[in-house]
Amino acid sequence: MNSEEGLKNWLREIQTKGFCYVDGCPATPEATQELLEKIAFIRHTHYGGFWDFTSDLSSKDTAYTSLALEAHTDTTYFSDPAGLQMFHLLSHTDGEGGTSLLVDGLRAARILEEEDYKAYKTLSRVKLFFHASGNDGISIQPSVAAPVLTHDHAWRYLLQVRWNNADRAAIDLPIEKVDEWYEAAAKFDKILKRKDMELWHQLVPGKPLIFDNWRVLHGRSAFTGKRRMCGGYINRDDFVSRFKMTNFGRDKVLESTVTG
Ligand SMILES: [Fe+2]
Image 1 (cartoon, rainbow, N blue to C red):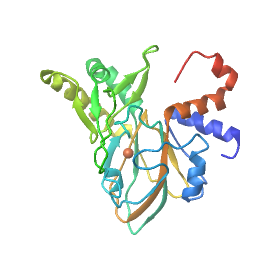
Image 2: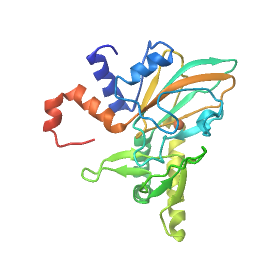
Image 3: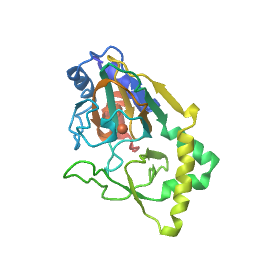
Image 4: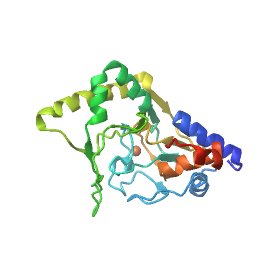
């Protein structure tokens, strides 16, 4: 990670596979922050910038508990959800559990498209609202509604998956059509929960995980004891800029008409 080549390979792994672990990072918040900032500046939200937290409910969000969390994407309630997310387990004492779960939302969407094209279209067309209102003085909602599956307008490829059952608000459909969305959502949910879609892995100190929050869903099993976790978000546009510049070089990027 101290060489341009290392950074280039890391970003390519994230871009092509959706996630990557880094070995040998010192188990400190300082080293983790330094690693994350090699990509770009950290995105601040109402949870702060770089996080260093325990399950103390200091923020009123299920992430700050020891409960199991089903697979979801973060910050669906922003007009521009966070692009990358890093987690680094610094310590886990007096307990066990808390295995991390990753699910490839892009693959799940492809399976839905093959198995039930109508449901895929419903999740691509119907727009939803989301909100984060757990903390005093805060109620974040996107300025425009967004579908579960967002496609690039010009090239038609799937660009983003938004999936968080805890943050979802109203569905932008006449009431008599709402069932159609729920049926499609239930089908997608079943695919996301298939055993062969789930990748479980125990986070350990010294091995931060980073993943594409526009593609990969994350969750965890319940845990006991005390965990200290750190990490943060990077904006997607800043990540893609860094990925393209390191992997293709400025001249090729500026010649290209392809975005995202
Ligand atoms: Fe999360």
